[in-house]
Image (cartoon, rainbow, N blue to C red):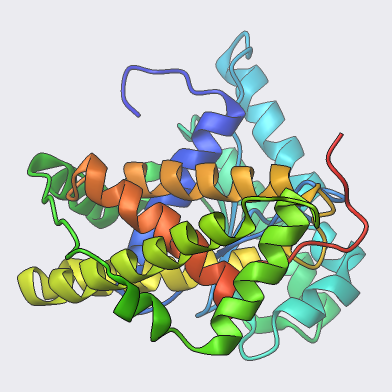
Length: 306
């Protein structure tokens, strides 16, 4: 993000976008760690091959020394959280171990920050935590660490590809499996209310959006297989996040459905600008429809809109 002084949230979104692309390029999955409930426990995201990422961008440092002090404080606070939240991380790192911890900042003003990270990594290694690799290391990097992903994102934004779905008729709607339809109806009743008079028409919309989404993906596979694979990996990452959040997010169904759709559309727009706006809109609403019917997206019982 040259020429800018990003807020913490902007920086986190920027790095999460690069992490998703970078992990996808090496055949791995990036899993963001939700921070709405009890914080992020020291990592904002992890990869399936054992990398952990924590972002930090401060805007109000008065000097280089002040910024160095804050970055070192971030390291001293967050790396020890691996021990503090050992039980939690042991449930997350099951198939692999945490091999690398990255603090990602807009700049690294002093090598003392790097030395601080290495020092705390050594302390973690001595603890022999069950989910930490014996060769665990900590690094401090900027977004240039993700240069290949940055180049890929720029390339994807250069020439938007607009893919429109074929029309969906009653025959296609009737062909959807009964379980998918039943799941969609059940969740829409949670969103719209049991007395909602428009459930059937709303259901038909979501089922149509799902079929259009599948049709666009089939066309993308033919037109651009490489982009299709990146999108497939991205959607798989998003689905895992939605599934995870479904166990802890107690927002009311209507509010959560809206926020899930908005978040997905924002992420698609940021990471897949190789696709046109209309195509991204189809993919976003179709993915949400898929999550309703296939059940990654659930609503916690008892949550009501105001």
